[in-house]
Length: 207
Image (cartoon, rainbow, N blue to C red; front, side, top):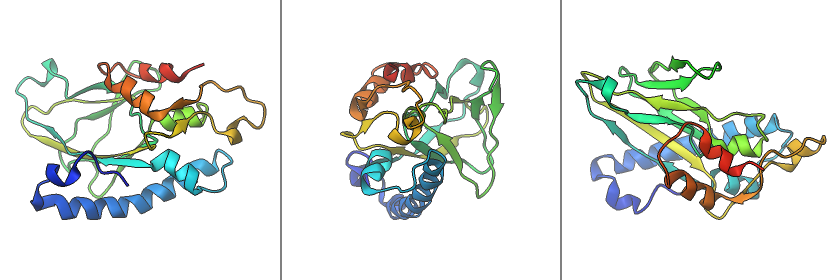
């Protein structure tokens, strides 16, 4: 399990133990979610190799969005899709700001925070490995005019040296692969080497 670079020096002592405990509980949930998602792709078992590919480097982040008197002129987070397998998001209980792209491609749908609930986003990796049977979620964050917003996402990423590409099980009926096989670290570097631009990052993996 990977918590981020030099985790122990980044997280303050006041929340370090809670963060580690939260990750331990979420790891169990994440494994169950991936098993369900994979079963729909005719993958019967999440073996060690697949587990390393899908969740070999999980990163826990703390996102801080200060209140902004003119939220319409700033971008909390620009539109993008995550480069994870899935993302598990814990929002503030009473401060919203998350929007996902509507199916029409033009509208934005508000995702209100629900006390005690987690938001699960499909990421680019699962879109690639499912050969688009699953679609990653384009989303953005809008700043709040009066209140500070905090969110805690867990990015469930492949190990850096993992090779991602369409699963053999989704191609066994003759479907043509839409994506090439590539090293996850190359996809990661490409994503962070440019500004957020919607879902264009996934084009990097297309055949």
